[in-house]
Length: 193
Image 1: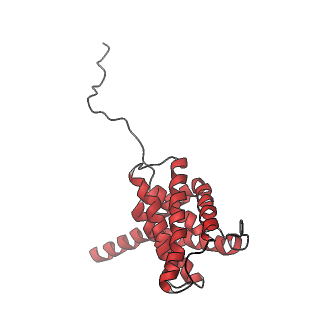
Image 2 (image 1 turned 180 degrees about the horizontal axis):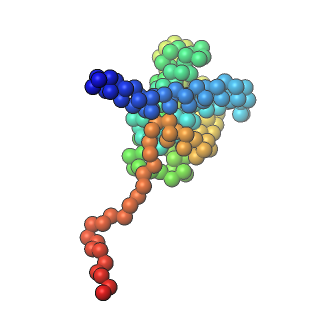
Image 3 (image 1 turned 180 degrees about the vertical axis):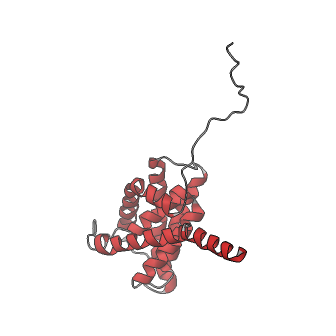
């Protein structure tokens, strides 16, 4: 009976944890990428909606959670497309980690700080894709096309970040911090009687 309770507790903890949430939102992000963003390029560049979700998760949850979400969503992208397995996982993981690195400076960033973090993280993620393709022998070296792709994808991720912050926070199981006034050195008021 004790083992059964522990097993049920472990199953319950897994089901409410971040892994099923990442899978559910990742499937939604992949479907939006395939149906909407891949079919309607902007300035002849396919926007990376899963990368925008990953960098929003990194900006709100930190570098470790951004890297995990990036690896999971990148792996889902690899398995649903024609890229080598692990290529987009590594690139998205780098993007989520870079966006989350700035979380060290502001633990609960405002939306405009998070958008700036998302811009930098998405730029790092998009720059990592051709580098990983070179290592895997998938294509040639970096072309001048990257000069158009990086700003367009990074700007799109920065614009989508304020909208994606709440789902990303839920996806990586981060609760918003509540600030309380410190009580150090303060005494309660004296009674009036």
